Image 1: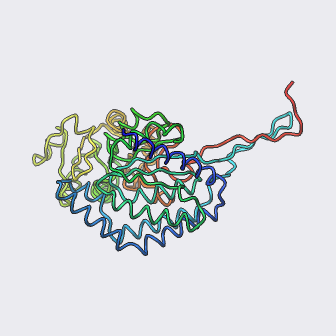
Image 2: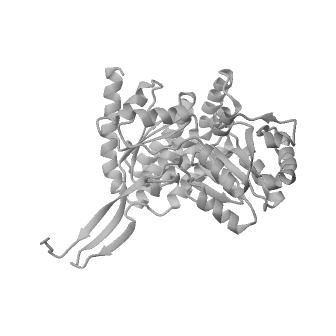
Image 3: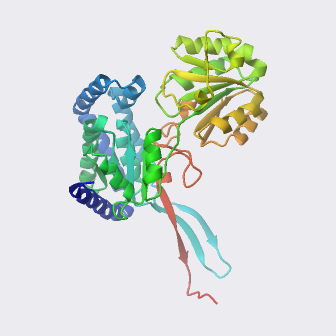
Amino acid sequence: MTSALDESMNAIGVAAAEAAKALGVATAVTKNTALTIAAINIDVRRADILAANVAEVAAAREAGRNDSFIDRMTLNDGRIDDMCAALRTIAALDDPVGRVLNTRSRPNGLEITRVAVPIGVIAIIYESRPNVTVDAAAIAVKAGNAVILRGGSECIKTNGALFECFRDACVAAGVSENAAQFIETPDRAAVGALLSGLNGTVDLVIPRGGKSLVARVQTDARTPVLSHLDGVCHVYIDRDADIKKAVAIAVNSKMRRTGVCGAAETLLIDKAALEKFWPPIAAALRADGCELRVDAAIQALDAETSLASKDDFFEEYLDAIISVAAVDSVSGAIEHIARFGSGHTDAIVTENENTAQQFIAGVDSAIVLHNASTQFADGGEFGLGAEIGIATGRLHARGPVGVEELTTYKNVVRGAGQIRP
């Protein structure tokens, strides 16, 4: 890293730390006003935002990026509307800062209260998803945190245009202009600087992107990391499933948007009902253009399929490809998911409540669904307005990361002169 970049990045950290102090005590009205104005700014400036995005999408196509990548980076009027709606939804949420999480009264008269507080300065490193610029900034600021954003180079102009809308809104609302900062340089050394913690000013790093990005952050970061692993998501079709639900959920889970982390990558079918469920599900997936990679049991029923390798069942395709396996009832599904899954999102389709409960209890993932598409693995669908990502670890946060997940807590102890004997 050059000395000039080093100095620039450290200055960003210092500015963020100062902004975090003010944000930590900012009123809900001030923060909500900033988010509301940001929605107005994005709506008013949408033509410029879309023009920047069209140029960058064209460049990505010319560079040979695949359809799923293009889909993730593409904006249109509907997606702009969704970003504005998310900002308004987040603004309408209760302020997460100052929430009383629990209280305890001790025999000596001490009153102990656990209160939610901001984390501080959060660095968010993400790839080419322009909505993350807005979602991450809004969630962080609502939770009283300063945020440093570093998006992918393919969308740097689109992200920059969206960021300006947010920064200007913060200034108009009386929030520090450094509450949210955007790393404009495409120099990858900037990522290394963020991972170093900027001389202790960064309190948390959140990566949102592919396997290589997350792996680098987990390996190199000198600050705590809140991340998600691959979205190797499963749909299990049980012998007691409703066939219409099974077909609809399997197709929607895979094909609604193949490039999102909640897209199903593996379909599991109970061996006891394979001949019943496979033909209609296969026909529906083929009709939508999905490639089928199956195990030997299914290929014996359907010679037009490709035989899956063991590696296929570990794969996050993010494309119109799905691996399929026949399993021995719900216990076989649970075992398969434990072996090949990533702890992200897994679903069961069944009308048997006892089987559903066995699956819910046995699958150790951040999100487990019964009779619903895995594509509901989304902060907006959870009523959070938006999300920064789906956390798949077991500490601090799990599932969609929204405003509450970007707070920590402190213990407030009130006494009347007690001293410890």
